[in-house]
Length: 430
Image (cartoon, rainbow, N blue to C red; front, side, top):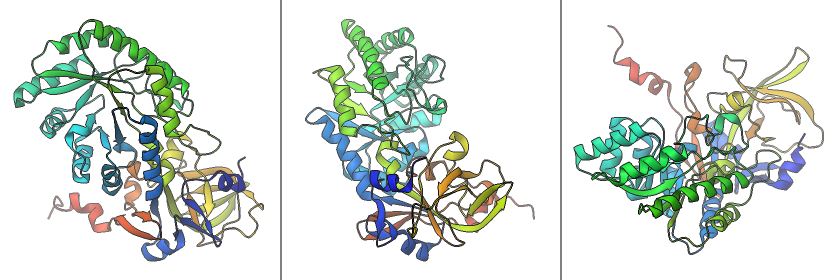
């Protein structure tokens, strides 16, 4: 079992102890809790910037677009921070399109992904002037063409290649194998490109591949890229040009013992596979930008011994952070006030208030003793934390704060009980 000492020695972004208190950058998490209560998410702006700039460093002077995968963390202030650094956006819904626009990301820096694009979504993306759709089926391509002609806007397209490569990650977040719903098999993709190249209202702009998420070994990405480049070469011989090479996202982060490459090294490894091709690189990172930038801070409500186990019950639940419940995901957990003797650990189940047996953040985890009202930080929660949260059990969405050095600000306030029922109240029978 990884110890707290190892967690701190390895480091998780800008979360560290200062004078015995866990801080995000220079701000004690306890100070934020005193003002806005718990639970809440805290994000380090420095970590977000450094991750983005590491990708940028990897590309050097090569033409590129770093398109942030908004699904990882949809907060507009996070997206705006990245937009100011020059980021584009990988989007999968009209809501994400709107969020990206409000954040200041122009349409010509957006890619629209996803297997189930609706007419409304396609029209909105065309009107926003997105760079291209990542197309996932023959029927989708045909529908994009029809709607492009209807609104008289030429649609940029890339076909998402399914390279049938095992990404060696959790099966629920693997997307690049033959049995998955994503992408188009190579032979079928060649045929779709031939069709698209002949259509007046379609413009072939790129080729795309995305094989999964939380991938910490670069070899599957390189293998997938090699297969995509073979397709690109075949297209070139037929006179079909793909100016953008979209390698997707999926680079993992450290939750426990993982040792992923730095974004810059990851990018350099991909470029080594491609050589000096004359194209624009596109990459769609999400988790590796925001994952280690965030923590969910909660308070201990109760403790009890039951069924031979010690339970520590906190005020955050699977409605706030669902990854452990659905993926059995590991998140580091630290006391906000540093334990007097961090080597004195005992097994505990960290559970939330939701009426589900899977409402749990840790199973039999070796942790220091927590007392009632102690604060706890669940780390590496910046990606797929708040973005996957819900109102289950009629729990309001918790606040989010962004830390910049010694200052912080709320970037989403706590949802009120009245807001929780606002969409239903007008339909109440008299």
